[in-house]
Image (cartoon, rainbow, N blue to C red; front, side, top):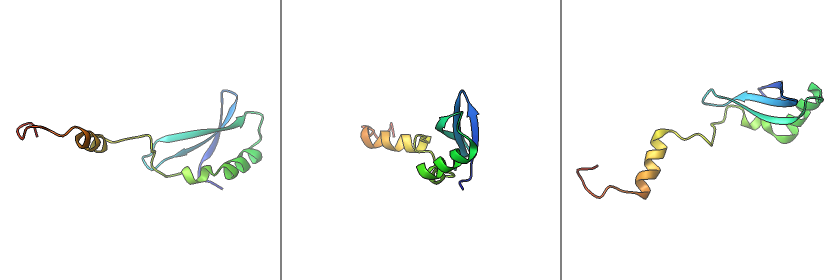
Length: 81
């Protein structure tokens, strides 16, 4: 069983977990009519357990952003550097 929890919200069942950065993330499993046993089976079937404690690929820190910017647009003058 994955390290996470189920939440029912707006007519849907969500699988929630915290990633490596400590942010809460969630994925929709189905309608709120689904019972807990079926929901946990679907978590295993879809492989959502792998997402727990992994960094969020959509988040970029400032250092990564600056590095990619400088790779594409290098400074022309030494004084600007």
